[in-house]
Image (cartoon, rainbow, N blue to C red):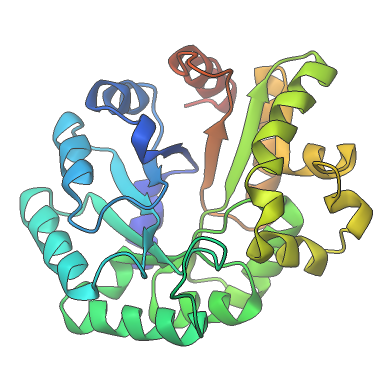
Amino acid sequence: MAEQLRDQLGQFGIWRSAAQVTGPLAADIERLGYGALWLGGSPDGDLAQVEGVLASTSTMIIGTSIVNIWKDQAALVAASYARLEDRFPGRFVLGIGAGHPEATGAYTRPYDALAGYLSELRQAGVPQHRLVLAALGPKVLRLAGQQAAGAIPYLVPPEHTSRARAILGAGPLLAPEHKAVLDTDETRARALGRSRVKTPYLGLVNYTSNLRRLGWAEADLADGGSDALIDALVAHGSAGQVAAKLRRHLDAGADQVVVQLLTEQGADPVPGYRELAGALGL
């Protein structure tokens, strides 16, 4: 079953905040050949927006990245999953996660809460092969490989992908997110990347702890991130250069690389998606 999901997703998908996704945009992304669109920013557990995006597309997989376990009850999410599966069979992947202590007052014993929530979803009929977890550390990665279809790590360089694959083993899905800026002006591209990494991610302990595990020093995490850190987390350059950097995740063991294209505020992302699709051979 995991192999079927892997084939459906393809090697490259798009991550975009749910608040910035419309039906027409999703249709454009599908036409460009991307295998999946992952809706970020804690979409509501009724999955109403996901349903609208599915209705606007025909074959592309739609996933959540992620439904926050503290925000909606598992019973509601499971019922919403069943509704989508009935209407759009085989096209939705439910990504869940524990979010961040800085954003959730109820954030206690996150591993136990996540494991319990996952168990509730499965008991309510959500199949294991359609569930993925936001996982960074070894413990949650193991849970993702044993009790779900796999992991969707966020804000990770290829070095994390290599470690995650070693923990997951060969079978489970591994689909890391990676940011990208299509701009050959290094200073300008790095500035845009830094602005999106610094706030909020370098202020969230889950991400900074993970980066420390990967060997990044305190100096790299300070003042918006060192140039080396930003370059590791945000691919920049021409479309060809960005594509080559994204493929490093595949070389490290990823099944799909989920691209978050960064643009200036209000800019239409479709031209960039199109240019990158060409460089990726979609």
